[in-house]
Length: 277
DNA sequence: GGGCAGGTGTAAT
DNA sequence: ATTACACCTGCC
Image (cartoon, rainbow, N blue to C red; front, side):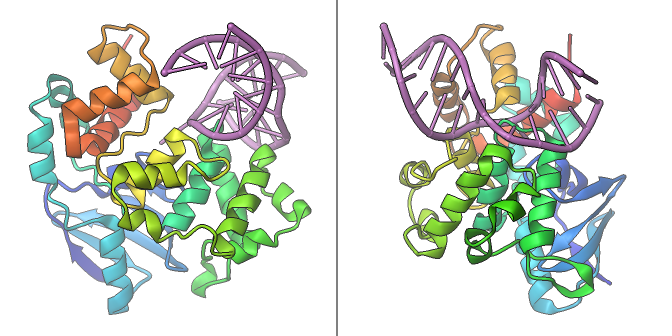
């Protein structure tokens, strides 16, 4: 058992339950999930996060990086508070941090998320890990490597309830396994070019691309527009008028700039947890 | 039981 | 550049 220090206003539970990552089970101030092949149990107490299931230095450092514990959230939120809507939202959403997920796992997870619901996304991702992931210690399971998914049988993928997304998963796995698509590349490119690159992948549209750029590649200016955020922006910034996704992205870029991704997270969490009539 | 769900691909203006 | 429609499948 180890404790990782955190900087206020970091909030572990909000960070893990606001839809960035699937596979964490959150309850009260605790979170259970699989990290680096281990079952881990996290609990936020005061100014620290108590970690059970990991003791090695390297893995703890990796967890710290994943949770983005060194982020200057106070600075980000100070900036966002200049916006009237976010100023109202922040008391309910403060402490959300952008994770730094593994790009491959994030990419496949969000391909699976398209036109799907959360319980079923969790079901599918969980089964992919059970069936195709390398077994880790303590009955944990790693996310399957591209090679494992590339060679997965139709029957095996079918058991993961992927539906028509199965062919996207297979195709993307093949592109990555063969080296035709380099997962390191988007990290090196500026946001617009990284985005164009991801959009060449089958099953990856604008929303999924932005999710991966934001949650795995650290492109904080990304602003994924899903139905919830679209609804929130139309309601609170356009007086309920219907606006295209492109206009919403331009609006977010103009208004929030480098912190658009954080703005998106707070709007998303706020509109989902505090529905108004 | 039937509609719905954190979009994407494709075809047609 | 925009708009319309089909789409696997487990849940509520």
